[in-house]
Length: 107
Length: 303
Image (cartoon, rainbow over all chains, first blue to last red):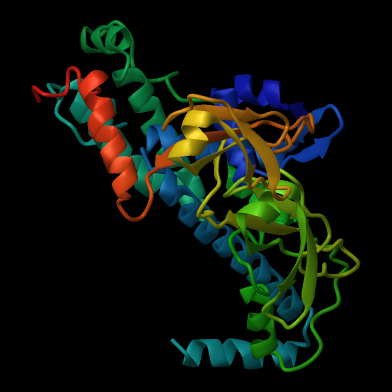
């Protein structure tokens, strides 16, 4: 789904000024087109998260990039871990057993 | 089934403020986007939001307290949290948020397996980079080309457009870090710092300076030379000018960033007496002042 800036403003309940600020600070990265910004689902979910952090959880503005950066790093790590998982998944049974043994030993 | 009060961990007599505080504290722990991968919190957060929706609305809370409505049906509908996308392909564009240098994740793989990374077609856009360019007042006012030395030894030529303001950020598309797997390069953001100038000060698109003139130049009028951002120009000081008299040099200001129209330069005169006292001038003033007394401190004698 694609949304315009105006639609996102209504959808998540945020002022246009705030949303514009978040875009300027590159906390949200909608596509820029001739006739304005286009938001996809991930951009909207991210903008909604920022609104909840700011408004519901009263996280101050300076802390937002810190929170976002740490979250994004967690997600990137989880994505990386998923790749490791799928690599192990397709490994030979012997290799799998070896890895399982080593992981247990590391506990 | 716990009551909404139990979910929030407050007494049924709790004030609206206590309820808000309790919600905020629990939401910080249970917000699904702050717990990537933890499936359990999503249900807990749903219950928490439902309880808070009910108790934060005085009318609904009163009806609940009187037993007119129960806590069910107060749950918020399911909605997609950020984490649902963040790990998918859609989330990839936010992967390097806040990471200027090469992604820490690449290091992880490099250390884990000292061999080729698993093949996967990923078209990742390169990270954006930010640099600071320091320019002097005149360069920012009339525009300039600057060559920046980057940390990796490369150079980047930046055109500073006329009228650039202190703190303004320029974007150089495609000059950031290279993309991966055929993805486009990131952008370079250049933050411009404009050094202050000993003579010129900027207000909007106008330039202001203070220019010393001699006593005869001020009293009798003169044509003098005034510095502008384009270089010296001649300036006519009218007779009977004074300290504080301000002359305008039309079109000698800074070009507007959008219209290109130039502002003006304002020259504020400052009358300066000769370095050394001159007996002739002193004699003259002694005679003159007896016949022409004048006051300049009206209203300042009673602080």
